[in-house]
Image (cartoon, rainbow, N blue to C red):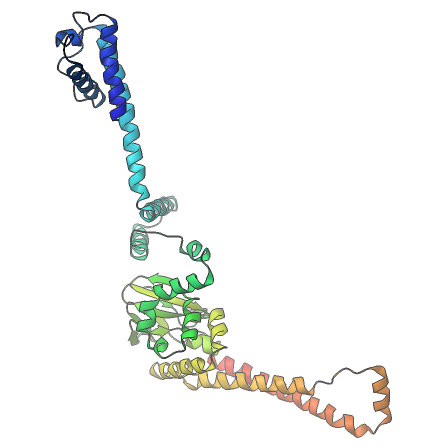
Length: 368
């Protein structure tokens, strides 16, 4: 800006000088023909900056056509320079807060979507409140950021983000650190507004939840509040443990910040930590008792799974191993009593498998 003003000031003095300082030029009016060069430069720079910043014409307005065109040129160059400077400054300021800019752009898209779909005003307000509470005016592409980190750094970042959750959930306090790390690495952050039904009774459960902040109510089939859960509690694990439908509804009483764990990740983690599964089963049994459900559902399901594993092992052991043709001929020449018990044992295994499968189906039907 100052460099452009310097060139403009020089031009303001150069043009009258080339015309031999006419009587109506600004240099002659201010009697600067014989003045010191520093005084001449100062008044020329002052006149140029006055034009460029559009704050005046210097000490005197232009008196001839040459000075008028010089003034117009100065004003145009000043306006252009000012616009470029303002745009660059705005871009620079926005670059300091990229997350807020992304949030504003995203929220603008949401507003246009709501207008396009003609959503009701109350629903628009709820969506706006959700975005304000969920993102707090800032938005990041967290999945992309974490995906670019190596496994070690990613795990440290996740542990740091979930540190308040781990500290507030008693279930994690005495758990194996490796178990905690595996769980938190698979959690997904979610937010619910007051009055939202996070879980509805009778639906198929696909995830369980850990409350970071907020209060939820456990609603029975009769519509009564059986109990309330707050920071550090978890819910939704019963149907994941039993493969049954939801046994109660869960409604948010306040804004609730929580983390969800899908059923696939739930089973993948607990299969490696049977002690933690037993702990969750005991808690689930207590909660079933509070809402008037049969607490033996959880333990029965666990026993059936163990029985099924045992039957599978028996069947695998009793399955005959393929042999070559020569060995089959040698065995045919032996006494037949060696093969009869095996056939009987295989038949018994099939019967046991059928009985257990039928029992499992019946119990699952009772749970539903």
